[in-house]
Length: 246
Image (cartoon, rainbow, N blue to C red; front, side):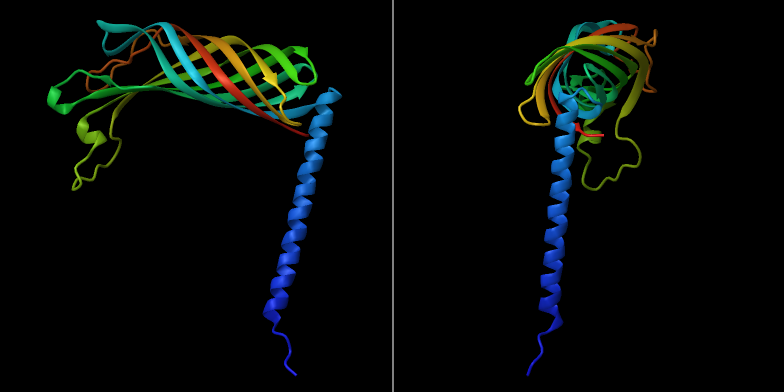
């Protein structure tokens, strides 16, 4: 009589273990979701992770991408952010980071054959506070503020940087970059709709006041940083959040 090989038996045992582990993991997630939902309803502490995406504008800023005597007023950028909050009742405290980049590139000064371009990026780190002054089972409306640090990064590149020849290997950065640092304070309002047990979607509008270094920085190639001094900024974003039990 032939004995069954151990391989099918091992496969069956492995499948049973994997199924049991998956079932236990799903049960843990379900229990955590129930705890987070209960915590919100009973005003007990819980945490919340939020991501955002939207438009970021400098409506009155003097942006000087080529030189100090060639400036334009205003700019609009694409912004993405992630935040983490500790919630208790109507109050929330937390921190977040935001990235923003210009929607297009500007032509930079220099020989036309070089095809120089200029682009700008933003990086913001801040502490946040919110108060939900209206709350129902499905909706929250809040107001809040924040303060932190901001870095504005100006970069200039030539065509050979962006589209290097196939037989050329560059070592080091492919663009000249100047960073302008400062701090920011701001306030905002928003609304969240609880469309699922621990999920919410919303909209926010924020105003921020930047205080950048007073004198513009210059690159080794003579290019000037496009922003300096005090700058007003507006951010309008769509929000998606998930609540997590402590």
